Image (cartoon, rainbow, N blue to C red; front, side, top):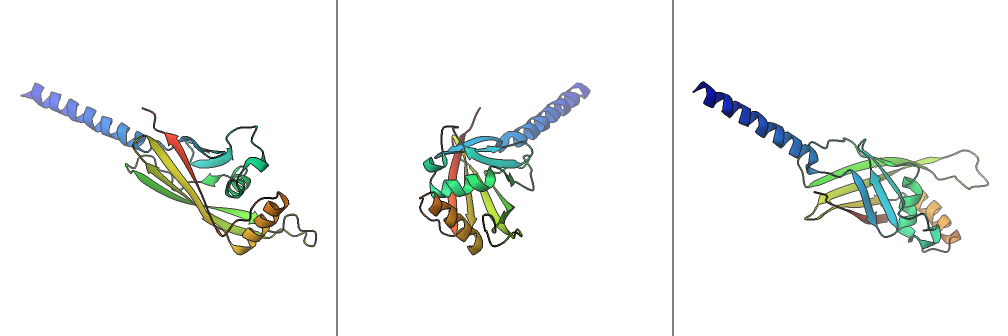
Length: 172
């Protein structure tokens, strides 16, 4: 009877460890996501950076929406908090804030003026991929600044709402 009880306890402990390990890996959102001309890297520290997926891609190759996301997340990155990979979920949403200096490039104003831009990262686990939709609603001042930059690059202007979609294959 004691041997049977010990064996049952050992099996239960192994099962619990197995479930704990599985949960930690369930939302394997860490890694590289690709979409259009962009690559987003999500680090194990909960930071997301958006860059061009290939060094040969120039600003001229980017769509207006890709340019906006690249311009602000290449240096700033997104902070995905609260960062918890132990939750067993098929969707995760994070909101990150960055500050944009809307007076950059302005000859009349030397003083920087920062405006908060909120960006949403919505991760979904599908059959063979993790999908991330990165979206933002630009404040009017930021949209004006970006459209000035896009016009100088001979690109289409953007509206207030911007969204890009990136995917990462699920590795087994």
